[in-house]
Image (cartoon, rainbow, N blue to C red; front, side, top):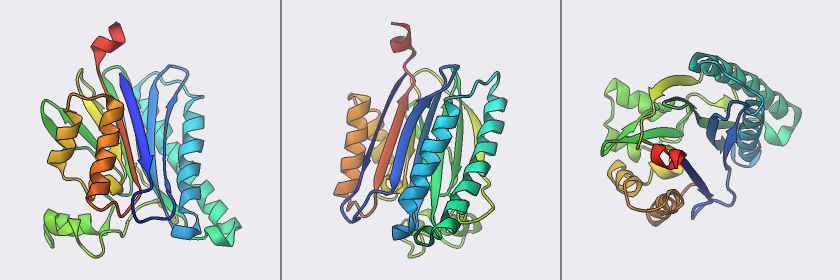
Length: 248
């Protein structure tokens, strides 16, 4: 298994409020996590860094007998972290209203748990196709589901940045958690909306399936988002399940 990640400030923002990390637990399972801070100068970077560092550090102390145990742990951990972010925001006036999106994965031998809250996304590249594993918790996605706007219209909708579920801000931190097969040659992509808003799925697929290293694929996706305008921070994390490499 190969893992690479990269984060970039983009071309318009004054600071990077995205955070990303990869951690191992006592069973040598891999936990990959990407967060996109919300709140501008009100501490979005604090919320995203708290989520990544706290949950990641706690993961390192875990041991799971089954994927179900990992699902239960992650759901509980996110609720606890939500309370911590809210408490810190209430403690400091300049952090009031801070929050973060989150997309994360726990990788087992042939399965993976993928979880999200907000509009940071998880994708699966398998057999020449790219599938979105996560559902955005956003106003425009609700409009798409109701048939009020099309997916193409959602990409440029003026309210596309309104998030309906976050970590922090509200006591309701209901994270979506799903279990998937993780087969040989599969690739998992976790990213913030700085990538998904700017790079089309077919271009992501082309990069993921290119004959380049995992690091180079991250670099190329970042470059593609910046070439498309780079209005936001951009974070990309790729997990390639190459069992031949693991056995060599």
